[in-house]
Amino acid sequence: MTTRRRALAAYLFPPLAVAAAFFVIPLAELARQSFSGGLASYARFFGDSYYLSALVITLGNAVLVTMVTIVVSYPLAFTYWQAGPRRRSLLVILLLSPFYANVVVKVFGWMVLLPAGLREGYWAILLIDVHRAMPFMVLMLAAALARIEPEVMESARMCGASPSRVIRTVVLPLSMPGVVGGGILVFSLTLASFIVPLLVGGAVGGRFLAVLMYHQITIAQDWGFGAAIGVVLLATASLAIAVGNRVVRGARLGRVMGDGFGG
Amino acid sequence: MAGIHIERLRKSFGRETVVDIDALEIRDGEFFSLLGPSGCGKTTTLRLVAGLVGADAGRILIGGRDATSVPTAKRNLGMVFQKYALFSHLTVAENVAYGLRERRVADSEIAKKVTGALALVALPDCADRYPHQLSGGQQQRVAMARAVVYQPDVLLLDEPLSNLDVKLRVAMRAELKRLQQTLGITTLFVTHDQQEALALSDRIGVMRNGRMEQVGTPQEIYDAPASVFVADFVGGTNVLGGVVRGVAGASVEVEIDGCAPLSAGHAGSFAAGAAVNVAMKPERVRLAASGPGRTGEVESVAYLGSGFSYLVRVGSQRVEARIPDAVMVDGRPLKAGDRVAVVFDGATARILDP
Image (tube, rainbow over all chains, first blue to last red; front, side, top):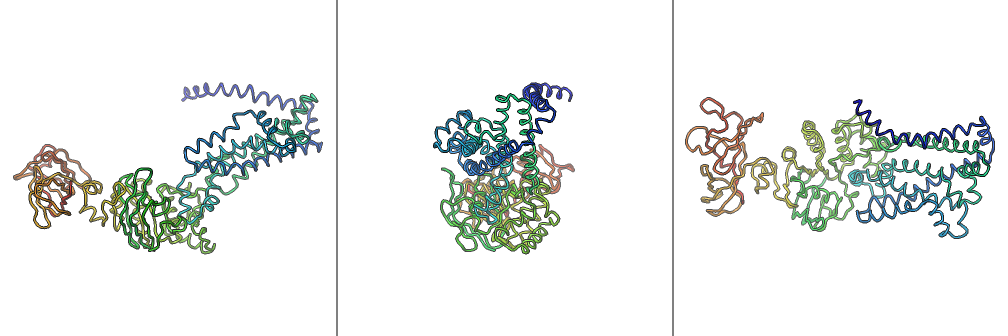
């Protein structure tokens, strides 16, 4: 037993060391710097409606992007799930293609494609954020759908459910782990989105917390306040995910969430 | 309630024909089993009746109405799957209520019927639990309640007992029969377990390569198999090669190498000198340990609890005899190496085409 434990520790040491060196320590450093002037940075943030509204804009965008991504990804995941093996491999290539390009390349791609009036501003942010998030969401949804046994849907049909009723009463509730898991993923991804609002956001792009933080550190050279914004962003994300998780778990979904996400 | 009428039903997957049934009549209120090895087409036949797969040709009538092109949801059938296939996001009561909800039955009526169905399957106290909180046997009962609560015309069972352990399977078998008789519902049951089919069915259809090999009551199937395949599949029958010596009316005299000639009933026409198979149940074979004609040699003796199984070599063939009490020779039980005479019961032997 002890040798097994020692072996496990030996395996776990390298990744844990990397995580500690490049994630935990910088994060701790960030938190430390945010308190360099005592609570002054936080007082400044929460005392200024400009920054509070930036928090609302950032959170609101993440929520909206998450919801839009769920809605547009679901039919795609459903199609993928129902497809035969050949169509499936074609779909997976198309689906993963956005991963082949860096987000910066993607943003410039969209700038070329979009008409002049849409090239800058909130709609550009929403569009590109959703585009970036879709593959993640589709993969999470497809994984959840793949776990639904065909017999369960057949049972519903035997009981008299039409195809649309089968989707509404069986497929949708049983795919909730994918919706929640994908939702959390997309929400976190979007909340921390920095390049997109910076490049296409125009005036509103400057009101995103990640961009504000960037400006505080590179232009204003105020590391303490920049760090405080980062901590607020991180805390908000964690809180939002915890609350979202609690709400979903409170819903009467029986076993579904128990062995899926947030269980 | 309704019978099922199948005519010239065909279904292929790719180039392989999996179902090819010329005619099959399942009577109103009957418990009918489709029995056969895996891949014989029995499950596909059930799924064709359910409408879960479409027929390539032929017709399926349920209660006299042509259901061939009616969608599954409109066929008013109940089905229990091998893997239970309960809705894991719904409670037991909601699972059972599902078919009633889809039929827009009033809430008060639903509550009454769900309670009744759960009482029928002896699960009255589980209404508010979720499927994963139940044992396999309990889940199976919920699946049955869900399938019968809306009074379907026909109940379809796809190996519903095969996921249960042996003891529970036998108990559930009795429950299933009781349930079917209480409801008087036409039942189509798919199984590869001949014991199950024999114990439960009013009639059995033995399937092979998509075709109906034989249809009959359990006793007919067991005692009078129509082919070597049925004799072999439906339970440990001895199938011995022999040669026809003569034909007299409805009985044929056959000589089996190493045994006394026997005359047996037959289904078909045979000419003298023709090679045939003789099917003979092990419990109908007797062994004589003394006297003349001891041409057989005991190869092994096994105690089965309910009796003894003797494997005896006669000529180039092997015969199993099952006898309730140990055969004695010189005051001791028969053992391997002893010589015996094998005596067949001509009245229960069947002559089959090779």
